[in-house]
Image (cartoon, rainbow, N blue to C red; front, side, top):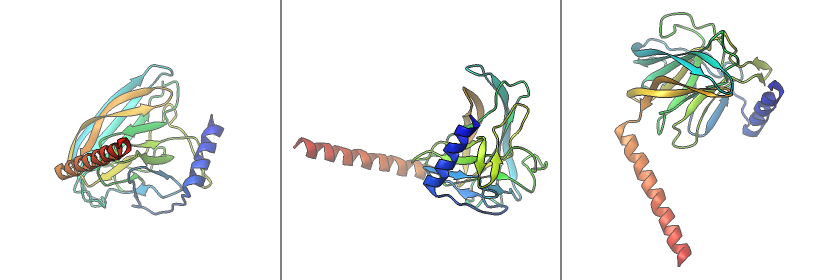
Length: 237
């Protein structure tokens, strides 16, 4: 299992040509259709000062084909001085219960359509609850789906990247604080997916695109439909 994951990660790095380096507060841009591998400090970031807007803690359980359970903690922050995009910041932390039968491999989130997003994990400063940030498992990578980029997530895959060894989130372990910086000024409740051999759903928070963003997305979809109709008309004639 680990050899297969390691090979896939290495192949992906070679294909995408990623050689990322960074420093503290070096969150990375996450445009639609992108994958960023953790090659050291590329994803390390901090929160600076902020105002805690909302928080929740959700228990999740999956039964088939492998049983696992845990907790997803979520926070929404405003006025975050280290958010380069000027909007709300979303912080997540994933826990795998000691009683779970298997490791966790991914936290999948949604609600990022049409938004600017930067991602990282806390490596210094304070957490949303004021505690230390120097414990927890670092993610192997963070990625975002193709345009409009609604889906994004952090993966915990066993393997080696740039000489660094990563592990899955094993039973009894907790992740680092995972951060999504956005340019959105609004948020709502949403559903995240925790993935291994099966999927468990957990309530969380997600950003809401601004009204003008929705308008641009609808206009773009209308233009694509118009072009498709024109092409179909030409093919018929």
